[in-house]
Image (cartoon, rainbow, N blue to C red):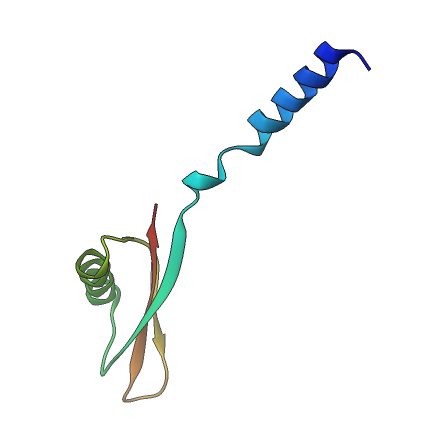
Length: 79
C-alpha cells in the first residue's frame, strides 16, 4: 500500500473514533419518598447532583411502589 493512503486511513479512523476522554460518567440515585411528583423529584435530583459532586440531571422519574411509598429515580451525569 501507498504510505500516504495508510496515513490517510489512520487519520480518518482517529477522526471518526472521537475522543473517549470526553465521555460522561453517569450514575443512578434513588430516593424513597412518601409521595412523589415531577417538580419535587427534579428539584431533589438537582440538589443531590450539585451537592454531591457537581453532577447535572440527565433524567428523572417518579415510580410508585405502593399506595404509601414512591421512589424518585435520578440519572446524574458528570463530564
